[in-house]
Amino acid sequence: MRRNNSRELLFFEEQKWSLKAIIAIDSIVLGPANASTKLYNYTDEDEAIADALDIAYFNSLRAALLRRSLGGGSIVLIGEQNVKNEMYFRALGVFLNRWNGNLYMTKAKGISYNDLNHVRKESGFILGLDESHNGLGKIYGSRARGMIWGLRAAAKEVFDNNSLKGLRIVVHGIGDLGSELVKELIAEGADITICDRIYDRIKVIQDKVRDIKIVRPEDVYKTKCDMFLSCASEKIMNASDIKELQCKVLTGSTNQILQSPEDSKLLSDRSILYLPGYIINGGDIIQLTNEISGYGKEKVESELPDIYYNTLDLINEAKKNAKTICSVAVEKSEEYVRNVSAIKMLK
Image (cartoon, one colour):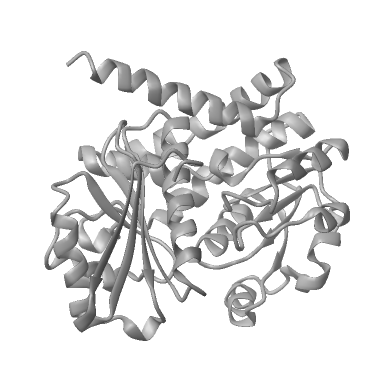
């Protein structure tokens, strides 16, 4: 908590329904906390706590970078998929109500839209619902389309052309978000190679795009490409993996691609532009803030290009001040939160 300067860490348990939840609140200075909710069978509670704190921190960081009125939070549910049922999620909804609108639940790994519907029976503090339930559509769609704008900024910097057409792009990890991103990249005319450890995910895309290129997980880092997009697990890449990379740009949806932040120097030494995921994956933040304010999809789409200009600004400021893009991003987000906090003290 001290490392991330997190605000609160809470534990919530309902034994009758096997509900064990860890709630991390990083900040509510900018607005109510966007609590990405994840169900996962963690090794132990320490691992779950660390994950909850990290998710909450990056939700704060992503919102501050885009100057959006959302705080950062997370809800981590411990267990296998078989613990889920209607009462499990209704109990979670009762807990959400205690926050009186300062904490909103959003969908993440292991949570379905049907699960959200169960929570809605007790609580209205849910964001990111699909259109059939009066939401603005699946948040992974907005996140993927926002990433396209971030990738255009990277292409502008490295290739002096903000078009993705013809660029060789590897997508590593094609789950909910990765598969949405592949669809968007196909529409952009990129030359795509995909990789995932779960063959069923590959087959879904293969059935739609017969000639799509596939690479095995053990060979993925050695694949020659213009951009390598990590959409798999957090902290997946170590120093040995970096040495194998054959790309000009490393980014993706993963907030923390590198196991050690210090390894970003290895990428710089090899003239690889590194954009951590939190810089370009904020399309969902744009959607959620518009959903809270009652705006529609058109406004969301009109604001997604903010990611393009924000990414270019971070790249240029990092070059100008001889800093890493990561350090500039953190400094700017922290400065924005401090300034908003000072304004609110005037009230």
